[in-house]
Length: 166
Image (cartoon, rainbow, N blue to C red; front, side):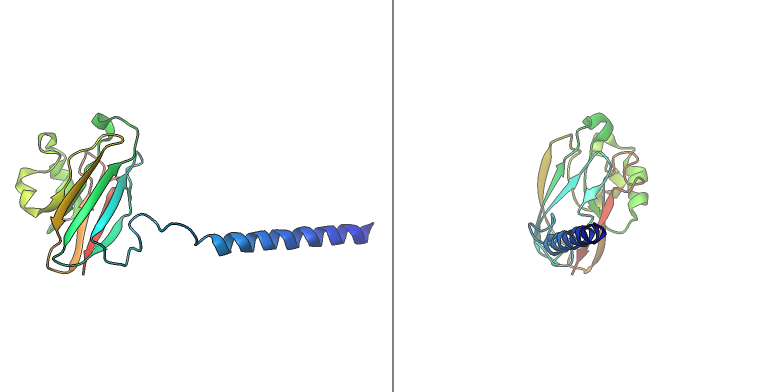
């Protein structure tokens, strides 16, 4: 009886180990993450924003001076008046410096008029289920360019990322 219990436990452990190995083996299979490999330069990218005030992906790479197509989707469900999202790619300012002033300008899609010359590209403020596609030319200067949601409090809550130009 004791020998049978040991065999059963050994068989259970072996089965569990085989199952765990299969999960690890196949975890990398399937579709790539949205935006693909964050280290690979792209000319087309889709970014989502959600009700938890998060972008996905938070980093993408583009080739310098190339035309870029960016689709931004608000995948949240909360009303636009309380959880609208925009996406602005900026240069020469920190995300907080840009957003702390821009959030005071709802009439201009939360883009401060005095910072419009610092905006590489921007979407409108989107409500739940809405999306917008914008086309812009990436800067010719390699470097890191922040993108933010400048809707009140969103940047401070972590809704920002980096566009890398190489």
